[in-house]
Length: 176
Image 1 (cartoon, rainbow, N blue to C red):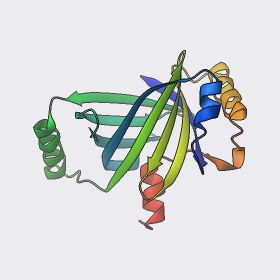
Image 2 (cartoon, helix red, strand yellow; image 1 turned 45 degrees about the horizontal axis):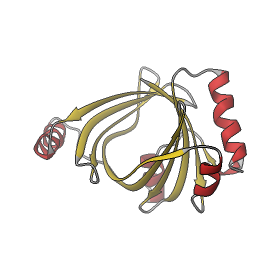
Image 3 (tube, rainbow, N blue to C red; image 1 turned 90 degrees about the horizontal axis):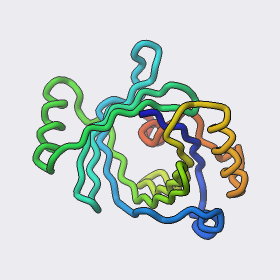
């Protein structure tokens, strides 16, 4: 599955503006992502591998993200059945040479309208972010939709986070 997204560093969550645009709140959660691979280049593409623990929903997954372009990421997300399978997966990955290199803890609010999601993240040690996402192809039409919504939310291009995920930002912050 490919996801097209733009991400912005923000000071506050513009919830009222999001709702005025017709987006509906779908869920709130606390997620902790345990990254084993951050920004490794394989066949010319950036790769990220993580396990995720959704504290609110008691759901677990093992995920691989391959960055396709400045806007698109191909994602493979595999559900893990329970907390023990989550622990076992992390143990196996560590034993075969993929220990956790960083942990990203975030509170997340998701809004949806049609095929577009707006995600508000409060990321521990990093602050507040807003992502606008479409599941689909990396087309100019989809990019235009993302940037039109960003403009309607008064998001400025200088606050846009380009080509960096939370683990990149976190590792930069602690100088690793």
